[in-house]
Length: 375
Image (tube, rainbow, N blue to C red; front, top):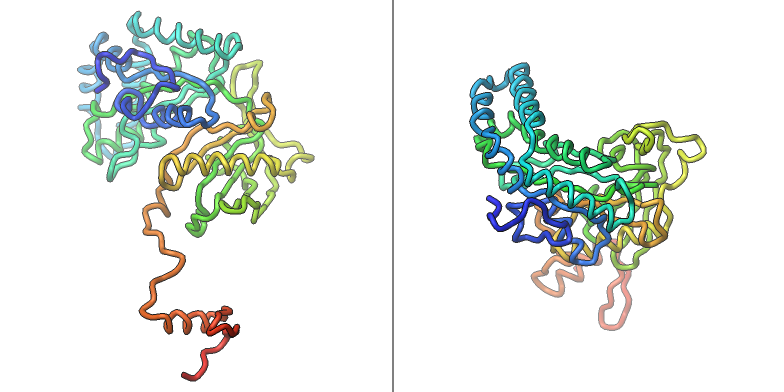
């Protein structure tokens, strides 16, 4: 549980590992990166203290448990019905005045700090059990983009809370035998990036596990098209030592997610033909994304899966911002092999190199390998 002395709202810049149970892994990561000097859009975290205060004051725990008791597992209609009833219950219940006031005032202060009235923000779920051994709750909760105004922020915070009870989340927790009341919800409210381009980067080559490379994928607009696999993104490989772009594949990109400011929403639209086959990022932006990714990898001490964006409103390099980072979970779980394998003897090392066709130096004479000589 979140300690009682922690307020209902914390600034992302103040979130650290000690606040994990209060703000969830996603918000902790954002706070740590800000403290490490990484360019992360500013924001705030509505803590799990606010979530539990809301449920306690309204007496919702008992009602939620009652609805869950009617669940028939593996029955899609039952799972959907239970989810709809709980989400409607949460979203229709007024917040305690203390919690609502804290969210209102913090959002207004964030808008003032950014010098943008009615600041557009992303409202992002940050559950406290997203990365547990043997279980993965990540991606089961909701995120809302381009939310403007304190009333709308409060409304969408509540929607994030209710997304703890999507059909998928309820079914998964039930199957895993994980108590529903042990997963709490924090919500991140973060300045929206006016993205010219966005995507993901891995601090290794996801195709081979090669940790000497940084892989970058991107598309025009917001990153949803890449995350959801709706386009074939541009792909780049950057060498961690030389910082050279060693691979470049510019794809034909047909759709992008853009902000419809007039209607305060995000829309998917076709990319004009003249931009479809252009690289969505410049070479200097590619190198800057790779540089930031390398800093984050060193900070966490293991390969990372990172979300980035290019803000069209800012000059380079300030326009290259990081939206999220998490541990890479495929190749990083495999034991990395050393570049040079240990040999039983110097002779074995020489023979192996000769077989591989390498040039080795024996007694000052260069010998070209290619076929194993008769010994």
